[in-house]
Length: 176
Figure 1: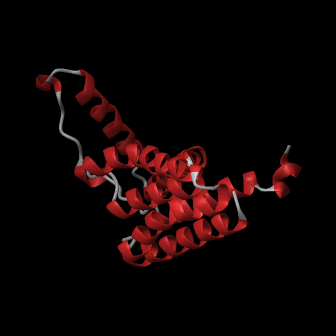
Figure 2: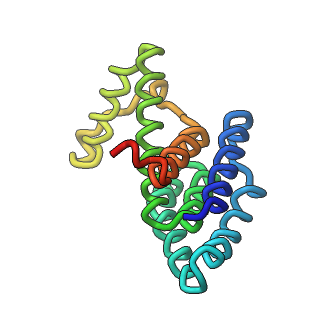
């Protein structure tokens, strides 16, 4: 991964984090150019053969976010940002960024719910929602909408990208 690729990824996710924190949206003017530039930057970094790898990264890194987006569990900007990072950083690093970002969001959600005193009610909702997946409809109980929590992912994606790139740099050798 070249320093230019890392810089573009960090700059894009920093801008996404700031705009998401301020407005609750990750704008198209950021995500579409990232999606378009990812194969081109990959070609500069690894030759023409890297374009296919970049496109594979876009597709693989869009799968889980697309499923979440289709169920209204994630925004479209998050989806396009993850896909762009997959194309820019490659499928392996892109999926790593997703995993780290989901871990950061899960931690922040648990901390927020505990702070607000809603953790146990929300955990009950999780059990009820799981029951909806495995039990017949006659046993379904309503979920309490007041315990549903929305979390913006922009900051988590930036932190995850920073961590993923930091682990891949030569300076990360001190960790091992």
